Length: 113
Image (cartoon, rainbow, N blue to C red):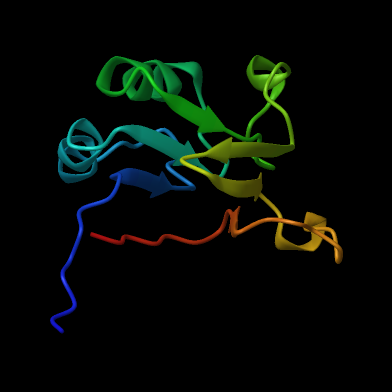
């Protein structure tokens, strides 16, 4: 029996954009169903750019996200496509008893295609 690849959902996982959303990253975001940002967006203009590229996004607040980001949570738990996601910027803020299928934290970059 052959193992058939079944296409799944395309999710852009990004972090630490620090007010710079490179064109190649923007192109990837446009091809995804949603964006998960692990913090350090660093400014409202960058968040607005992400909003314009993908209406479906989840973000957490990073250590460089200042007063403008006061409404953005430091941690976030969300269920997407039948999987539980836990997001935070600082790895040390991941609870030892976290119950999630996927954990995303900042200070890192991961691209899965």
